[in-house]
Image 1 (cartoon, rainbow, N blue to C red):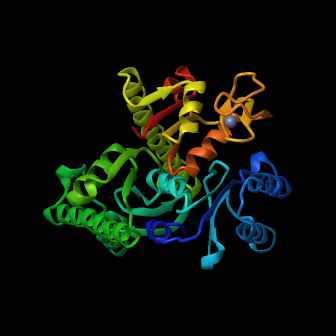
Image 2 (image 1 turned 45 degrees about the horizontal axis):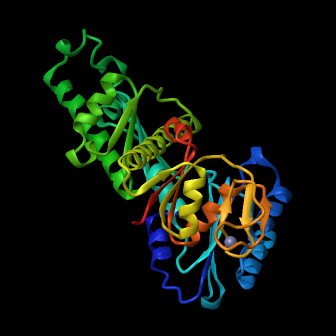
Image 3 (image 1 turned 135 degrees about the vertical axis):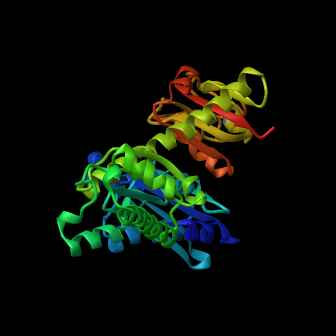
Length: 366
Ligand SMILES: [Zn+2]
C-alpha cells in the first residue's frame, strides 16, 4: 500500500545520481500486457539512464504480477534504489529522469483518494470500511449494547413497540443512547487505527445525523458528507461511492487551480494561456506549473538541436536555426520537459474553463 510514509521515503531520497520515475497506465480498457509493455518501451526510449531503464523493464517483464490499473516505479541504480507501487487508480504515462523522484502524481492521488473511512450506520450498529487509493483495506462491523440486550431479552423488549420514543422507559432511553455511544466510539477507534483522514457516513438522514452528532469534534470536522445507503450494501457499492467523492475532490482541486491560472493570466501577471505561448515558456524553462486538459494532444515540430517545440509548420528553429522534425504530440514533449525542469503538471478532467482557454496554460516561475 502506498501511504504518506512511502511518499516521505521517496521525498527523503537524497540522490546524487539522477532518478528515473516511471508511471504506466494499465487500465484494462486500454489494452493488454503486451500493449503496456510496448508503451513502456516507447516511454523509456527518451530516457538516457540505461541501467535504470533495464531495471524497470526487468521488473515489468519478470517480477510484476499485473495487479492494478497503473504502476509507479522509481529507480536509481547507482544508489541501489528501486521501488515499485501498483495502484488501483489509473494514472497518466510518464517517464522522467531528474535529481528527485517525480512524486507529484502519487501525492495528488493521496490527496484525493487516500484514507477514506466509511461508516454505514443504522439503529443497531455500523459497518466500517477503510478505502485507500481505490482499494478496500479493512472492514469491520459493530453492534451496539442495545442490540446485544435485545438479543438476550427477545424481540418483545424492543423499544418503539410501545409507540416510539414517548413509550420508552428511562432504562430503554439510556440503552439507545449507550448504543450510539458504543457504535461511535468503536468507529473512532477504527478510524484512528487506519489513519483515516476523511469520513463518509451512509444511512438514513436520521441515523447519519445522530452518528455524526455523537462523533468527537475532531472527527466531525473530517466528515466529507453523508449519503443514503442500505446496511446490506456490498463493499463495491460503498467503494464506488468513495471513488465518486474522490473524483469530485479531484475536480474541485483542479477547478481551483485553473481559476488561479486564469485570474493570473487575465491580470497579465506571471501566467500564460494557449499553445504557442506556453511552448515558448517551456523552452525557456520558466514554467512552474503546466496545465493540460487530459487527453489533449497536437502534432507539431521539435528542434533537433535546442529542443524548441512549436505547432507552426516550419523547417527551421526560431531559436537556433537548426532543422525541425515532425512529432505526433507536442503536448507530451512539453509535459516531459516541464517535469525534467522540476516543474509541476496539472492534468484537468473535463474542466471547461481550461478547454475554453486553449487547453494549455502555465503559471510561470517569475
Ligand atoms: Zn533550436
